[in-house]
Image 1 (cartoon, rainbow, N blue to C red):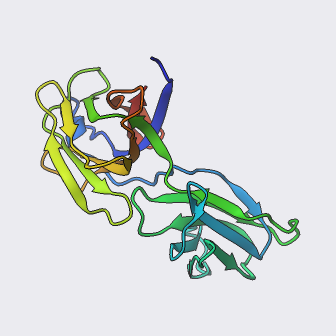
Image 2: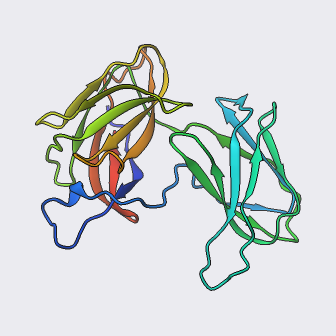
Length: 234
């Protein structure tokens, strides 16, 4: 069953002098799973929910967009959601900002533009996490952009809120991996190239033993706007 293709911005980039081993060098790169821009007034509310249930105690950071020519950038504003999942920002100076949900895996951010004469804003609603795929088993295949197997990659299964490692494996010669979650729910899959666990890409996936998909879609490494990228081929 074909479900389309979803591009996941990556942590990978190709080195100019390595055409055959490009997948070995993954570089940190700004990426965003919830890239929804918002135009707001100086006072606005952010609501964070998990499947419509408010999430209390989530740390949010509002950071001004970097401009090396401007030395008067305001300091980041740090807030935490209340029992209703809300955090209210007051008297934010005009400009462009990144709203970052801190200490979550995968991490999310959205662009926010504060305009003095903007209409009073509705709440910015962040539904967390954005699940990339649902399957009845956590098994799949990792390819490179030439549709060839990507062996030896580290694949880890993480608990969603704490990032605790629940299971791990490596892709075999055919790029195949299999993990064993204990129960239905949303998890994080973390992919790292051989020998470089600090360079990784996270995606949220859901285990549902009633799903019609018996395994996760194939992941392929392809060129994106952020260097080389992970593409979920559903």
